[in-house]
Image (tube, rainbow, N blue to C red; front, side):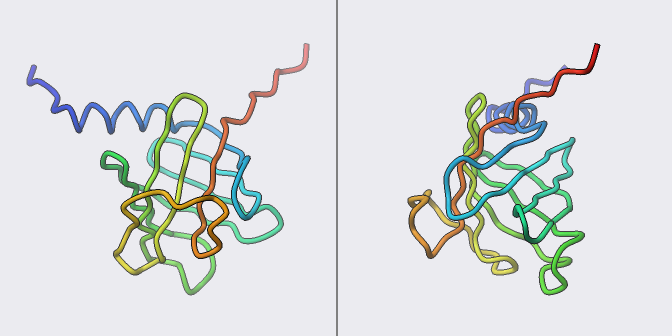
Length: 127
């Protein structure tokens, strides 16, 4: 079996960590982010919902928007991310621009949509 390149192993590990439901805990708005395989659903609480697929490279996420506001459908959101255990930092560049940020801005910087998420607690089934 061929050896896995370190960048590929990191991306695979990040993909595993991203799976599940995330709830924003810091940033300019309240949002929920659901990841299942390489598919996502992103809901601005009380606002727009985006759905699509994504590709990862270390620290980078390209999100193809299949469903959402008409002016964003079919476009790519070039994002940066960092996931560590139950905390996810995520910040998109301008949708469709092809340009992504090189570093995370402050969550208080109103020029960017920079969010911090925590993994949502799993609800226990009824007995």
